[in-house]
Image (cartoon, protein in one colour):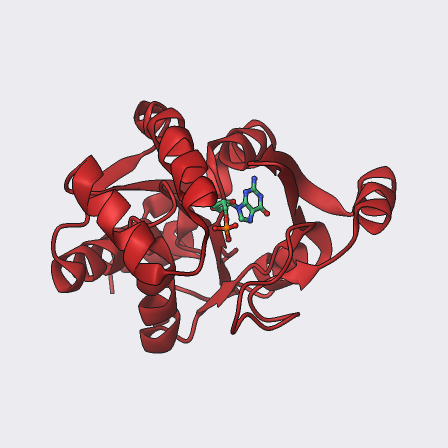
Amino acid sequence: MPSVVSSGVRRGLMFVLSSPSGAGKSTLSRLLLQDDSNIVMSVSATTRPPRPGEVDGKDYYFVDQPRFEEMVREEAFLEWAHVFSNRYGTPRGPVEAALALGRDVLFDIDWQGTQQIAQKAQGDLVRVFILPPSMQALEHRLRSRAQDSDEVIQGRMARAADEISHWAEYDYVLVNDDLERCLSQVKTILAAERLKRARQIGLAEFVKELLIPK
Ligand code: 5GP
């Protein structure tokens, strides 16, 4: 929502949600996007095969290894990383276009991608890490999704500890033991970050005008 202060377009912010697989990040992202029309999802490219129900161009751009490598060479990615045995990358173009229009961009990326974006654009970046309430709950969520084989789930559990070890590199850390509460905390963070002094266009002019004796 524009404030009385804005006289131009506020530059969008990059809102990263990271967590181990199964901590509820996809659900939180979906609900946030549903409720907030000024934030758009960054759709990543991946070499992993689609899961049942996943749609190309919506959940991911599913590309083969040669195409991914070509995109790396063309510098088409803002960041990219190996996750499990696949590659994932954030296409640069849509993100830059959205930010320039003053729209915020939501990223569901891992700690490696978050570190890369932080090196390039610290000022535009807000990093949120979602923790599961327990490792048992995490495993339970992974199993109840029933989309991955046992072997894949074991791999994801092993990776989860590694992902969690990066929690301290994030600006905000939430425990997702209650989806509604966690969603409301995510919205609160986004609302507060949008109000940061540096992100409010025209604030200096507004205050100057405010102080002119009338
Ligand atoms: P999944 O295969 O479960 O969809 O995603 C596996 C992991 O890859 C998740 O932790 C997700 O956040 C991460 N991921 C998805 N897209 C990207 C991306 O573009 N870049 C990076 N660095 N990680 C990603």
